[in-house]
Amino acid sequence: MLEAREISAGYGIVPVIRNISLTVDNGDILVLLGRNGVGKTTLLKSLIGLLKPSSGKILIDGLDVTEWAPSRIAKAGVAYVPQGRGIFPKLTVEENLRVGLRGRKDRSSTIPDDVLAMFPILKERMNQLGGTLSGGQQQILALARALCSDPSHLLLDEPSEGIQPSIIRQISELLQTFSHELDLTILLVEQNLELVRTTATRCFVMEKGCLSRELTTDELEDDQKVFEALAL
Amino acid sequence: MGRISISHTPLPKMSYLVILLVIAFVYSAPLIVGTYSASLLRDAMLFSMIALGLDYLWGKTGTLSFGHATFFGAGAYGAAIVSTKLGLDPTLGSWLGLISGVSIAMLIALVVGYFLIFGGVRGSYFTIVTLALAVISEHVIVGWSDITGGDAGLLGIPPLFFPTLSGLAPLSPVVLYWFIASVVCLTALSLWWVCSGRYGLILKTIEDNEERAQALGHNTSQHLLTVFVGSSAVAALGGALYASTVGFVAKDIVGLILSTQVIIWVAIGGRGTLIGPVIAAIFVIWFEQRISSINVQLWPLFMGFLFILAVFVFPNGVLRTLVGILRKLGQRLEHRV
Image 1: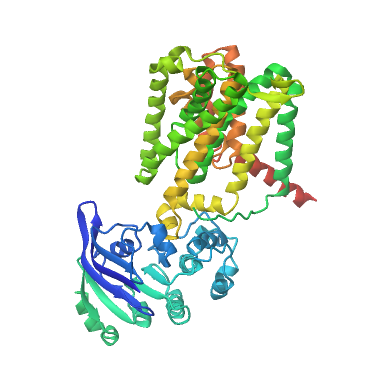
Image 2 (image 1 turned 90 degrees about the vertical axis):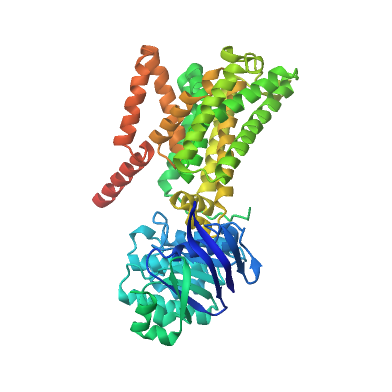
């Protein structure tokens, strides 16, 4: 369970998010919808410790991690897939996966077979440089790397950005597998409605640094309601 | 820090051959080129330790230090002061000096590095502060003349004593050369071995994008500090050995000029190859002696020319360019056969 209690954060003196409270329950795929610049990435960065909140608390499974360094939060089981994929282009696929092993609690230094089995496309390209993969493949690699740390929580920042529909469908299936079979608690920041509709168990809309409303899964199916919530 | 497992990717067979040849040449050099040239080579090897240390930092993590001569100087002056000023027996004092020199440099690196790295100072800001460190250390050496000898430097540093059949004695020049060659080779090989495993990957991810490395669970500040202190220790070991080998220290072994030269050695040799900067340092220093013996004023001109050449013709360093050419030749030969 991942919980944010009234957190505010920003860059320097510029506040970006204000008093956000949010709970992602175990087994949930919670989606944050919102237009550009409303603070979605800032919220994710605060949750994983890359940005220290100016006030409020962050709890993982009831444990206060607000003051923890990002590396410690990662080891506590929170994996993060940054916007724009965030793989290491100069490392090979295999090396990218190996550096993802650090967060594991069992300190194993081999890439788990079940992770590889889930991503056949990577298995074929283990020795290729990450930077030479296509955008979609890089995103898949980023997902696989996140799994290498054997996390309990997964935070994703717009995994569909700049990716063709067939791969978005694949990502949607993967996220559902992560949730149902690996019991991952997932927080997804997304703008692609198809991906949101196929994965979300709960959905919040963000506006100007705050959570403005919750959309039920039924409301999500209704274009009119969604556009209204997003003030489009 | 957690346990870091090291598994290694095998090198192409050629590289082992090249490494063996280089080592064989280094060890047989005093017998081939004569004692005087061997002593130049020996000093060049000691200076190359700064390049090795800097490449461990700059080449592996992308963090450029403009003050690495400071640590060489701290090692050398630390060794000189402890072995000459404390009234110790030279047989003991020389070794104690070596250990103190390296420890003092590591302590400086630890304190400076801790505040810089954990304070979030990165990139060019880090470089500028280390540049200031180089300037400060130069002033300390000149200004604190009671201890450091000021402009005159310190003389009479005892050589290292080794147990021999007739009691403790300094090594003969050739054996001393071999001892120093072994220290340099061993340090270079161990750094290379350590960096060729998963640890090297982690450093590469830090160079690539530190935030991502953090989000994957790597304590990047701790890694950077370890590398910074380690790289200073390598430079300081060179400096401390230099003090006991040459017998005197002067202010030209600290400060900005030497720090800048080291950066040029690393750039010419190939950043991140570890062995490249060592070879480049030795070669450039040897070249400097040759050119300067014709005309002292010619050298800065050549140095500038070499640097421009390194930037335009060998942007990846001479070593990588050579390996690339050899590889292409090898492929062509295979095609013909």
